[in-house]
Image 1 (tube, helix red, strand yellow):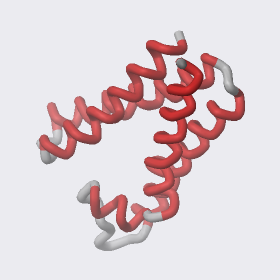
Image 2 (image 1 turned 90 degrees about the vertical axis):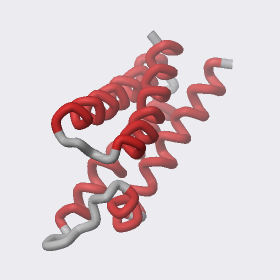
Image 3 (image 1 turned 180 degrees about the vertical axis):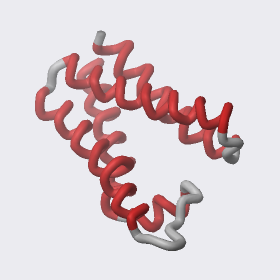
Length: 116
C-alpha cells in the first residue's frame, strides 16, 4: 500500500511541477507572480517551480527507494517552511499560502512518514 501511495504522491509532484515547467505564465499568474518588466520570472517558474519537482518526482519513481521518496519530502518541507516564513515577513494572501502550503506540508508529511 505504501508503494502505491508513494507512486501517487510522486505523480502528483510531477503533475504540479508540470504546470510550472510547461505553463509558466499560468503558474505565475496563479501565484500572483505575473512578469511585468522581464521574462526572467518565467525562467524561474520553469526551473524552481517546474523542473525541480518534475525531476525530483521522476527520480523517486525511477530509484524506487524509500530515501528517494524521503528526499522529495524534504524538498516539500523546504517549500512549506518558505511559505510559513513568508506569512511572518511578507504579508502574502493568507488563503493562497494556506492552500499551497497545506498541499506542500501534506506531501512532505506523507513522504517523510512513509519512507523514514
